[in-house]
Length: 610
Ligand SMILES: Nc1ncnc2c1ncn2[C@@H]1O[C@H](COP(=O)(O)OP(=O)(O)OP(=O)(O)O)[C@@H](O)[C@H]1O
Image (cartoon, helix red, strand yellow):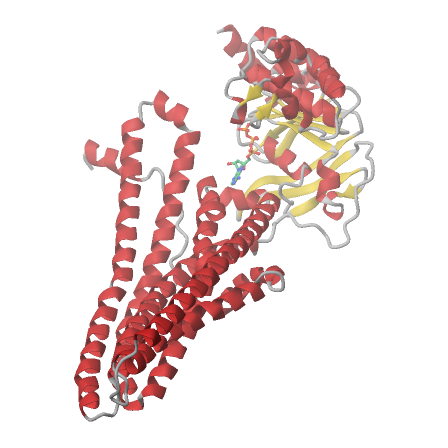
């Protein structure tokens, strides 16, 4: 392979997103029913008004051509051959006008109420979806790019908006109108009615072949959009790395490509949609041709009046409109089905870390922690922990050390029950953590991550995240205890300073101190510090060391730190390698052993003094 070809190949393999399967499924009625289930709470409240308005709107619409016929046959060219009557004509015009007003009022009210219901349904659906996603386990997020999760809560829910605001009601109105017109036409003149509708079956045959393709096309559009969003999310999160490695051009190229594919897929779906139009137009033209050809013959043979012919012509105009709309509605329904499939797929996803039906709250804990014969794998066949036995007494501090990928974070993940072990159990105060409620467990296990997440809001609110009912004084006391108070006071608005999402305007060390304050406020019996002191300058590290002392005092703590200074004083240092405990003891004991730990410390000293 040439260098250029290899480069192109390497680029191609970046930003590969797992696609949702494009599956051919029969129209899923159960899913549609499930979707309509969301209408249930509003059935009594608003649906009767909408149905009444719908009936009034359709009835007036159907009645107007009848008045036109009466005006022609009785006021302009009376059937009995007598003279026309202007007064009668005015009367009919007045009636038609009145009906138009009623129709307008009914439609306005109907649209208003359908919008209210539609928006409430969308709110409920989004509420359920977001609420459910919040509860899903880490495994779920391991498999999916954040962008594609985002699309389901935004785009896919939005796609249902049209269906619920106008779609359903329009569908019903169109069906009622169609049935009404068919009945009226057949009642006026059965032969002429049949003759003008002879093209309908033909149209259905042609359009049904289009439907399958349309369904696929819209599913494809959703997939392409999902990919764009996944890429967008990744690009924005990784913008610093992109710019640092001057990859903007390539990134734009990747995006353009996806954008183009999305545009083409949309064009294809929309062109297929449009294909309904001409099919309807041709059938409508043929129908009109038959009407005038056969209709004029029936007038000459005095079977029907001119008024009836005009009435037929008006109704035929109204007849193809709903059929055309039903075609479009069908695609709208397909879009909605494709979206709802994706929404329900998430709603049906069970958290892999579940709660037992009768799980009890974990009572206030002392902080004894025990890992018993733990085996764990993220992916089948690739164990990340291979039989971990570890006992920690309440109040002890444990340092987890080992090469990257040795399983340190995994131990922590199991302690917080972000994942469940494949074998073995984790006990807190002698209780298997799988038997207690997740909330009662996590609220007593505090965690300070290396990449501290700062939410958009004030500094005060960010600290308060640790315990929502904490008072302002408690927040400030916590900040003082972990040496964060001084830097907070030096910010323009002190505790009220607004920090943007992820706290980009704060330094690493500052973010770390904030997260310490947050953890201290939460006051957990068990505390986890993941790589908490990495990448900070010496002065900040001193502050952090002091803060740590306050934070760790009297708590069972697990510390993952590459830095010697943090782990030196730990009661027990556990050395991991490839998911197994290789050594454990305090610093002096392990140094004496001259094993892996000794090697790690030596390497760090060599590195620092180099
Ligand atoms: N979400 C995940 N999905 C699949 N494999 C994972 C996942 N997280 C970690 N692993 C794998 O599990 C093993 C242990 O990872 P872990 O994060 O526990 O290591 P670590 O010792 O904390 O490493 P580091 O010091 O780099 O943070 C590694 O081989 C890693 O590739």
